Image (tube, rainbow, N blue to C red; front, side, top):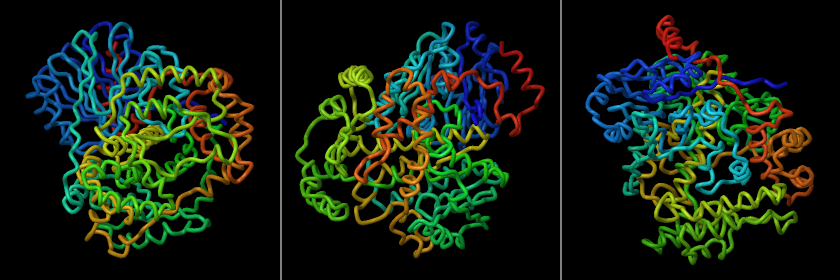
Length: 640
């Protein structure tokens, strides 16, 4: 059963021009808050819970923070009064805790940005002759009637996305702002320029100093969300991501409900054991709920029954039925925030490729760490050490590896992939079911990207660590939007900028170790969580459940792909997908189907109801404490 278009949380920022009134009229219906230019024209239209909107005004200038943050109205009033120009707000962007978008109007120029880690993004587009800014690409696409870019969608079919593939606009006419940048729109609403605001910390701190900074940053990230009180929900798996979040949530004024899931698979009960070891030392009593995964939707089950408004085909789609089940269960406990541990693996785990960079300054230490990787991961000497000879630039590597990506083979030999590598980014292959025409169009795009390519850092380690973080926050962004469809804030504090900066500031060889499980977080929580708990060395995954779900739901997944725009546009060949996307022998690699399913749900075909359409007439934000109702209705009617 198709569940229909769900609510969205978003904002739109408009220039101080009469031409923008038509856009404002289409967006203002159901808005939680409309903030105006000094002229009285609408500037910022927000569809968000009221507690996620903070605004400060001084004369004609205003600064708004949208999302969870430590900002107060007084702080933002002072910033608006002394800014002078939009560039002066860089420092504010670096000091606030939380996960938020910052939007400002200073001397007639509008500035808008998301988070450097990438959970919050900003986009702009020319609509009705003026530049309109939003934190949702799909909202701008609907406002401007922009078509889907099938080549960008084709690139999303890679199992992993080397930078900058995830930055390719999914709609023609909608431009993304770099995660570490802001867009500035002039007073006429004509010129939109981008500038970088984020300063990446140098990895100079020791583990001890970095752990103290991480502890403070994570405490601040959680407090930015719990300071309003009420009840919050925590996933509590007993790991080094969810347990610290639960600990800091229990320090604040909000009541905490924590849920631990278990199953009958080998190791499926470990999370429950470890969660119970941590609960007695929580700062306040935590209501603990246990559930079996057998009560949840199966992996890959129920995908065809969901119509979800997300603005990127992330893994949030594939996980949607199970995540929505968990959020509904949390909502039954009257909670408004659902904390998760997303981002911890990317920020707290190291990779073999880091040693390529370390080898240039501390070769003996790098060789020792590579040997540890080799023994722990069962690598050959060539697999472990061979990458040290590779001195290609990022552009040369991209040209060789990404532009020239092969089609994945169909036999045991063709399925082989390196376990780990020292490459700049992911080594990729085309899923066998992507058509020749689609690959050729994508190849032209990839060659164009290679001509003007800049890595995320000057060396492999600095590029790879930030690429991994943004790959993780792409999922967190999707699940945040997923939660909004239920009016639930599904939040990942470990993906906040201040938390990511705390991790990046630590020397890599001290931040992680091949022989230790997330040692920086272990050090950060020393003295807060029990010593016995901090000796945990592993986490059990859900691979067995995933394999069972794929086998059980194969037929409906094929139909989901057949009815999508991927099939209608000739991007995928259905005969090849039926033959090769599902395991028939033990050696077959089937995970390529995951991104295809995400894209199929993101882009339904005409038989499935066509593109997701229609700006929502209202959002669930309105039920969460609007300001004076009459004032809000007056704002909405006057927006035009």
